[in-house]
Image (cartoon, rainbow, N blue to C red):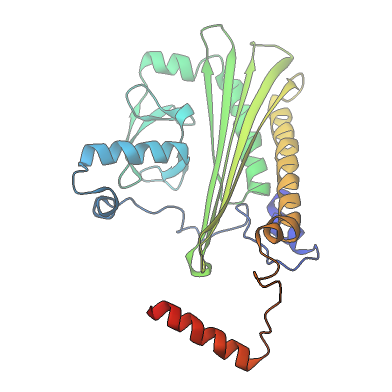
Amino acid sequence: MALSLLRSRRSDRKRKAPDPPSPRAPAPRLSRTAVARPADVRKLVGPELDEESLARMVAKVNREQFLSVELPGSSERVLLTPAGQLPNGNFLEPSGQQQLKVDHLQQRCTGVAPLSKAEATKYAGVSEPTRKKVAAAMDQYAAECLPEATVTTYGRDDTDGNIVVTCCVGRCSMNLGSFWSGSWRSEWTLVMAPGASQGQLSGNVKCNVHYFEDGNVQLSDSTAFQKSLDCQSDVGAAFAGQVKQFEEKFVTSMEDIYQTMNEQVLNALRRRLPITKVKFDWDNRASVHKLATELNAFKAA
């Protein structure tokens, strides 16, 4: 589909700059995250950093970056997100109606526990049928447009009697050998009354691409969307269809950025001519040798 082909779509356009990696392109399965090692962090922060403070810092990063963890004894993965964090610090696993215990420093799930009666009523009550429909549709959408992404869909009944369904999608791509990485995070929330034909869909997308070959360059972009959603027929299909429209609009805007970046933005940052207003003759060996000599002398001084 178009979203999963972002990189190839950009490469079809004529321009001199090489294509940056798409955060929506396939990536090695084993290169999702890097475990936070206390010794490495202390080298940057200082030896006074204790284990408890480090764990809190890493936990915050894991939540904000939608860390994907594998369930014990299973290949199924679940996102750790602010929307899924429970008051006790554990994380909701909505499909199995259970909570996850997580070691944030090791970035892995260490165990599961059942939800309490009150939690089961809140997170698997009236909203559960709608949550299942949205989860199935978004799983299919992600499989087609964002391969290997992790999708976690939550449902809950709020205090006003509304159904609230939140779908989080996360993907981290890394290719350290080619000196790039990228991430894609999106969160979509539908609020509607039970049995209503209309609901309010809101969401946001956050994307980051990082190059670190002979430098350190990052491109971060984000945007938010909001629209009324017609839920008369299939709420799952309507949800996924609207998300697709929003994300395609976002990807198109990023393509435009890549298209104009080299020709406009980067050229505006360069000084076209040296201070002498005369272009340097790089084909003249004598001039190049003289420049190298002057630079070496300046460096020695």
